[in-house]
Length: 292
Image (tube, rainbow, N blue to C red; front, side):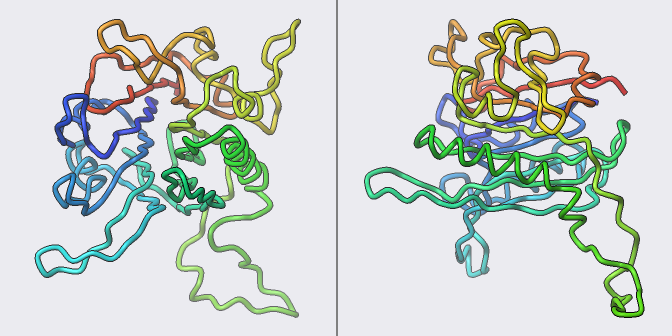
């Protein structure tokens, strides 16, 4: 099972040209995709719904779009929603989805946008998996720590929160309207993947919060209720694999895009790679393959 995360910079490549077909080409072969900076109906990108377009180009993939910016717009006399945010695309049906919005820091002297975490529950060859995609703040470490902690909290309380529609038992004291239960929902799975442009490097505090603190004798301490960096689970070094190049010719830069997985899934990692050749965005896609 191949999972890819990609900050697509709303389809704008390194050459300044908007081309979501080029974006989709970089994603060919993926089974599950997490997108960040995807938009719908913006003048700058041709007033199209980018996620719909990419899903169709990949072969009519299932998708959910977690817009964190949502503004009314009229395009050629038609009312639209000008949106921006995260998305999950999948070869397999997405059983349930929800988007959690992060508290917003709004400084007067910097550009700040609404951020969030989009969840998709997918029945995969590895079983039912919660898949999360997010784009953490670019502003400061303090806000990224908050986003990392909120993401970790959402993951840890998932079972207690229950499914998107829960409470189906009929007891003497309560009778649930059966119209809510058209079909049974799967139990909340323990297995999860968290991916995205998280805007921190492995030596920053939010990385340790999600992937475990470092021990001088044992390396990263894997927490049963936390995540493992699939890049290192595949045998790579934390300091390798830049995803945001400062120099395309030398492919040097920093690693800020990740695919993290719960320990059970991390044990099934076969490989992880940065897709170095595409110039469809200012970021590079990251791919992890899990053994089925």
